[in-house]
View (cartoon, rainbow, N blue to C red):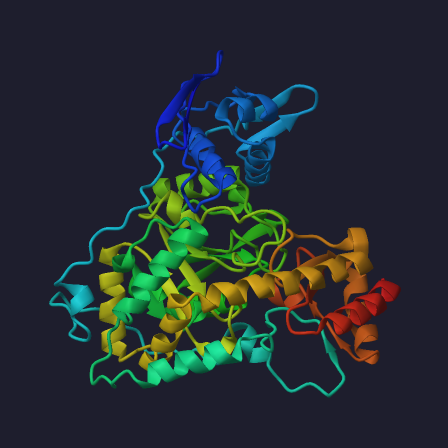
Length: 503
């Protein structure tokens, strides 16, 4: 394998690794991207496109660091990230190898550059319905009350609320918030609503997703929505026909099955385990499948590389659309999140995201990422429904993104939530399941213990959630879903200590 590294004079020094495949490694010391991230990206691409073959042994971290002229820490950090993602595996006493995943077919890594934004066409026509045939638009469904928001009821003062799905909204930057709204207030009102969203916000979201999630999208791929459930409703309206089969994770996000049913779909539960959706449980024919691969809700697993590739192979084989809810991807506390499914196959995946967790639920801004052609169809649906996302809110969010305020807020909240998760793990120990991510954990229990524990916790002033309401029918995976997003750190510690005594 040839390793080429940048020098201070911006020239590459060519080095050879005897006995290994030919894979150029170009580390740019002048880049803002950390060297460990650059190395991890290039090794990952080598596995993905077949330059590094399954079962291939890599050099030791010490040898590779010496040949690249970097510290050993750079190499070990890159290896650790690829271990966590499932691309590499360590064999005791033998070294580091490319993971052998049966059925993997090398594919070229997706390009991350953006295409120019067209000066005419859908992105520049705010409200006119594009000239095309008639669109089937079922009766509008009022999204309020769907999914988790339906359970929002006032709780007595002093209650420790350990239910999932609620973020901590008190640690926001008040000065940045006011600045964003002042700037939004200076924007003149518009008499036309752009069904795609404000062009500047679409540019900023595309940039944010490329940087944070490895999503190869430009503004022409992005539509601004009011959140995940809203984006899912738009997709279902555009793609589902009465009786079409729509798969949902079981247990999973209830709003997904409610949206699909409301749009005439035939809801098909697809079983999950603690790593995510089970490929063996997906029927051969679905029109679409909704999944949460970054942090499965509610069991908390992260879909491994082998299943991701298997899921995309299934979608390509059957022609199904995978609706990827990038749930909790912004909150990981050990290693970086896996790249979004969308980045592996933009033609078969529609990506959904929201600011409800990262900023606040009442901001009401999310995004939908897909091909320009499908985005065009969804825009037609929005025009027919007179559906829109608030222009002033979009303008304020644009300022938060443009100034880096959202990124700074996310860094603060990752530290805060990591402390709370550590408190949960300290109290409940080995009972906790799920990746080190997100705002909730899963605690499995015998079926006959779930309700007694919930009742006993309620008597002690504590609210808990269970997996029961997240199942489609029979409860297959009984247990508790513990949220630590909206309770203070002292309350999380106190509540989990009480829960530990009940368990």
